[in-house]
Length: 426
Image (cartoon, rainbow, N blue to C red; front, side):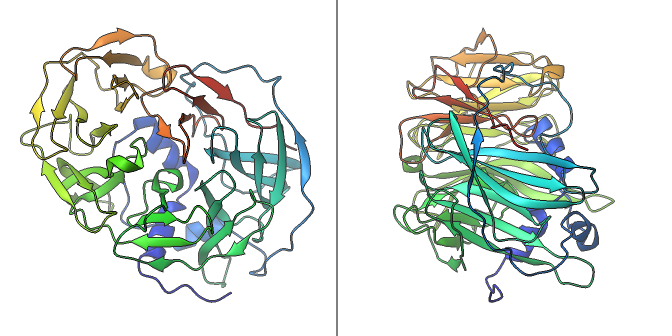
């Protein structure tokens, strides 16, 4: 397996594979930016420990029963540990799952570890019938390797991995599968000035810490990295924006480093690229849009023309709207008291703005909808829809329950939702 030589992978890998407690903290606060400058490779090696760097041969797929006996959970999960823990010392055989991703409205995939004591094999489970039946496949990686999975089409997957132990150097790379995870190949990514036409941007499935734009060919599984030149500090790409609306990111105008190496953003901003990441338009909001330097805003749009930037000032929800694709903005009259709750927002296919304040049940979440472009906010019962990702190549949406659960909420119209449970695993 040749070494990978593209710029930025080492930085992205070090950040993407931080221990799971960091992911929990991030999701619990949604957009609170408490990033560290660097990750200790020593600590990373401990959680990604492997006995050797050799790749394990594939095994025959094993059918896994569905989990329709599992009751549909409450929409807002209870606070607690993430659905999986980093591989570590264990007794007996256990399964530890990660987030579920969608290939289309029927094909879903779940990364998981099959642990026997301290040895945790890397696995992917897949369903082609919306969770009624599942099959599992091993990845050609050493035990305990850290990895994340993204779907670019109904049967096209990529996995970004990293492993190493003791005196063995940290190693990272990419795998690709075009048959739903049954067979994998090493994928050496290329670089490009912009996302090739028809390729899928998968950053929102891989994690917010990838600074480059990661795009995947839905036919071949090839990977390309596009330099992120938006000018934003600590950018986070919006996953709930249709591809035809452009590539949108929120972040900051500048950043500072606090004691202990924590990066803190200053000056809320958004940026958009309409040519696959080659060029960007940026807007920095004047004054305080959010409650503090390390609380970011959420950006939401369906068509790339009517765009919302939702945040809070003190305890008040704030909505800014652009009618010209982000070139000019004005604050709407819609507001609500949300305390210190973090905020997320999406736009339904019918143009309704959906805003959720609070992530887990302990937050006592609030939800609002607006049918008049943010000028008024109507309280509604919390339900999926405020972080609804479009499904690749299909008319439909999904919303993750990660990191508190491994299931996925599914909707064909962005309004009516059902739940896909993870499979029963060993």
